[in-house]
Amino acid sequence: MRRPRPRPRPRPRPARGHVLAALAVLTALLMLLHPWIPSSPATGNLGSLVQTFLPWTGLAVPALLAAALLRRSRRALVAVLLPALAWTWLYGTTLADGARGGPADLSVVTHNVDDANPDPAGTARAVAASGAQLIALEELTRPALDTYERELAASHPYHVVQGTVGLWSTFPLRDPGGTPIVPWRLLLRATAETPKGPVTVYVAHLPSVRLGAGGFTTERRNEAARNLDAQLRAGPGGRTLLVGDFNGTTADGALAPVMERFTAAQESAGAGFGLSWPARFPVARIDQILVRGGLTPLSAWTLPATASDHLPVAASLRY
Picture 1: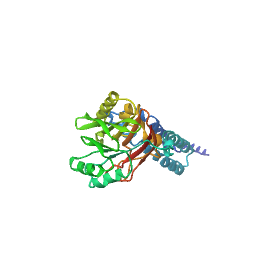
Picture 2: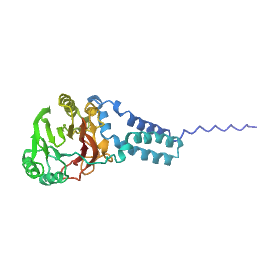
Picture 3: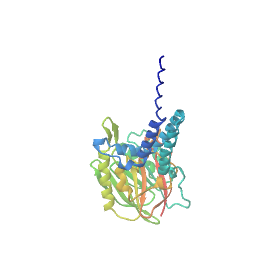
């Protein structure tokens, strides 16, 4: 009589959702450890790329959550809490309105007007209608400059232009000057004589960055950022405004030396991320209003789109 063969023991089923759980942990680590991601030509400047679009990493949370629910994995559901908490820790307060009450002493707008802007007159009227006392414009071209000067003359009678950047003011401007931060880009500096005392104003336009097959090309921008920091260190103290198109977010490590001594108006007193580029569907805030030396942001916001590929950004300040 034959003995029945013993049934093979069933193989243990792999734990559900372990891949999703690992992805959730990696996403949380990416959010929290972004300052230590290498950013060099050898790595395709991966650190700067991640930091530019860092707020968008939050989109991974609902995607991972949906996958965990479909997979019916408790392990993955618990792991998704990690990136959710990391993103909340980084940006939870950003979603709240940080505006402070009280009257403003100074209002400012900065706008990259786009060197191919088909309607400079309309753009000038739009920024003037904001009521800002200081208007900084970047990417000015010689053919369009006459239009900006003409349209802003009545509301902002004082102005200075250095290279492709300019500053228009309702207050007298003194000691204007321009210093190269790369050979073809000048850093504008002037002192605005406001009723409550002088304010040093810098207007900068750092070189563009590009994303291509070789990675994120930021070398020229980074060089300009280093030179900008050197100029700021050598400049006067006191109330200081630094505005312009930085082609980088305040989280970008290339701007870290500048951000150590300045406060970003949007992050201090704005509501949301204040994304400014590209104008049709903004994905990053690369246009900045930064303050130091006794200037406190009361509110910060973006203005409606003009004919430029950037949105104008604005802030109100108190001394």
